[in-house]
Length: 588
Image (tube, rainbow, N blue to C red):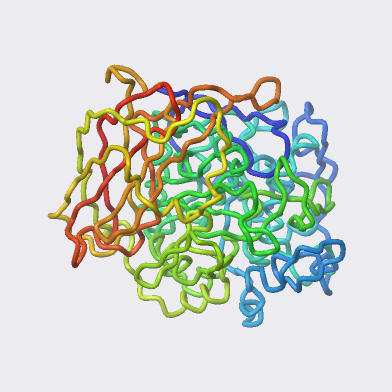
């Protein structure tokens, strides 16, 4: 089995921080871990570790200012007029359409968002009014900086990620400084679980205070290396999220937003990161200020919705802006980027939805986001439609529209929570058949599956096909599908030597196709340098979590009940077999 993958913030920078997560042990602690106001440290008290290169000291609470937010004009993702100075590629109205919500005097009041991330500058003047006093949790134990204190502060100059995320969600509005967040009066707590290198801490943070927190923002994921990355073993990632779905918000279910991944320039594919495609995760993709897929944003059948972010990636320059937000030591940044920046925008939109209708369940939220998302890049051939929903492997169901989502949330008839969720399967198939090499080429091939976006909607027609017919399943509206696949070597006794050679699709009885994996190169890091490897790893009992078939029936009204998994090997050498696979349906 492939080792537990490292987790990284999903912004577009060289990977300087390797928060390597060990195999998980223990269970999540849902205690509050807070510090009473009466225990507030005296001004001048060191709030983080003596070994930190950045030092934070307690200070008296600043008086709340008033007046316009001077940096708001640079926050194009909130209101895009298409004319930000210095950027010629922008397109007006490519934003979140959030101003109509604010005009109803709704800013996320009463909604609490937890940042599962690195250190958060809870003392930042533009964040502090929204930070829950005593509600954050420090996972680092460094001298006087005790684990469990409510001061999860940054430790060095590379530790800005969580503070950037926080400003996108809930920088305070109308206080005369900085900018404003999507939900500028929502409450924030910070959990610096990624600092310790322990997957147990990350899983703990994802269910901490689940009776108080509404949303968990996860702007991180496995390194974008192309491998089939299965999340933590032991107390599993999926089980931890399921715990939040079942118990969070007093049974309505916690909302988990996740960054969809930044590796598209290298051929990576979002659904290959198992942590962002499990049941209950809301994977977020990124568009740029022109309304096109950001060059780094990974496509996949797991994606829910996109939000605006930077236009350039690790390989490219851009005439498009990045995201303006809060920075370290009471400053601001204009270069926040990646799906890391898009994800907190969706967290902010969800906060506005929950303020409008606090009774929305974890199942209601993605349905509303998908139904109200705005179709962009309409000339892109990859758009399909079914039952009133539009989907594209590059954009999910489209770009989130805050005004439309909040309007629908107000009148939404709930589909229920965990107790009414139906499950059919797993339906298991033993294929045990060779995957043929078809139209193969030798050597390394360009990893650009997006030259023909429509091809991601086409089933593999020249390889092997294996079918299952779940005719006994009464789910008429799919909400999520798990497809678990094992590919072996040619002898059927070991792992497939190069699963990155494979193209694999799942086609429904309604004729809709999900591309599960595409031919791509895998990588590993050597001295902070990306190095290609001839063999990808991890396609053994690997679960592909899919949103693409949302609202389809398992058994079509006309067309039968046959679901088809098809696979072909698109590169010469290193052949293998399709072993066992299964499909599990969730919905109503």
